[in-house]
Image (cartoon, rainbow, N blue to C red; front, side):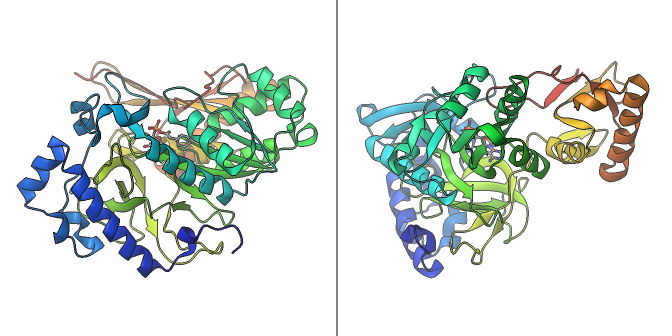
Amino acid sequence: MMGHAAAEIMDPGERERAQLERLRRTVRRVAAVPFYRDALAERGVLPDDLTCLADLRTLPFTTKDDLRRGYPFGFLTVPREEIVRVHTSSGTTGKPVVAGYTRQDLDLWAEVMARTLRCAGVDQRDVLHNAYGYGLFTGGLGFHLGAEAVGATVVPASGGVTKRQVMLLVDLGATVLTCTPSYALVIAETAREMGVDLRRDGALRVGIFGAEAWSGGMHRQLEEQLGLEAFDIYGLTEIIGPGVAVECSAHQGLHIAEDHFLPEVVDPDTGEPLAEGETGELVLTTLTKEGMPLLRFRTRDRTALHRGKCACGRTLVRMDPIRGRTDDMLVVRGMNLFPSQVEELLLADPAVGSNYLLVVERKENRLDQLEIQVELHPEAWAAGEESRGRHEHRLSFELRGRLGISARVVAKEPGSLPRSEGKAKRVADRRELG
Ligand code: DLL
């Protein structure tokens, strides 16, 4: 088990004892936050009442709305002066969540990110091209910290100016590419347009992709187009950023750094804990965070947990890749649908390119219309209108047969759908509710 940190391979019983001790410490710590002080008092829970990890369920949940109500610094357990860095959560309009890090939190982040990178086989011999966005988003600076801690040569490319990225990838001999899966596709596509074959001209060996949901089909496409082994990485700003969980070379789910982030899966409607292997909402409790520790944060991400040893030797719990959030589920004419299910089906089709968009419309209280716009492969597009029509028919037939949804499929010219440097937007919900 060369190279694995002791915390990754320790005996699960021993780990549980450490987790419980850290949980008690965290409960003591969060009492400094009015939200938690009140919620704990209401439940009558004292830190020493926690006698086993199952007692976690006696603690209050924290939602994104709770954090927004505390905007910007209401959840800090240290004076603001001890915060040396902030990041903000991405997406959605309105006020973001501000995450504050103490010096010790940054050290923790570097440690879990270094562990993450080693899990994907990165070490000091690597040249790591980091194309996650630098700035308020945690992707860029989080990977940067970890890569420096591992001792790799970091290229802080950030997102954008893709042609220059392709040039640097080749010229600097990058062995590791880190960015969102959708931006990795843009890089692959731009390289092709430039006449660069990254498989032949590049030295890429590992890709660490995350920050958005991506399907198994996308995983295979990226490996093929870039000539690397792809690893899924998961994390979120509220908890720390990237570094919460990552795949190992066994590719049997993502190992959660559970000595620092305690996971549960609950029924999203009732909040009741679910058994191992059951899919529900991931809930995370930080065990060692100093500036902004959180109890039972509702991630809204859907997954299942699996215990039992992994072929890689780690005893850390694994979670299934996140294929959707409880709030990105589309309900179209009463059918539940996750965009990633559509992605899996589309990308399995040889005529289809890698970009697609789901457009849902509802006009004048008529039934919802789902239109799926898909870019075809250049050859399939060039084959003419009649052939394009056949592809559209076949795809909508398969969508009905395999996912039970009726959708109009519209073939699009390669390169015509919007591209993203960060998280891709795959759904345009244009329903006028009224
Ligand atoms: O996306 C942190 C991150 C940066 C993770 C770089 C991985 C790599 P947020 O911007 O706060 O943080 O968004 C968090 O993104 O709740 C998920 O819904 C989604 N997400 C993150 N990683 C994955 C993944 C960063 N591997 C939200 N698969 C989370 C699916 C993911 N969804």
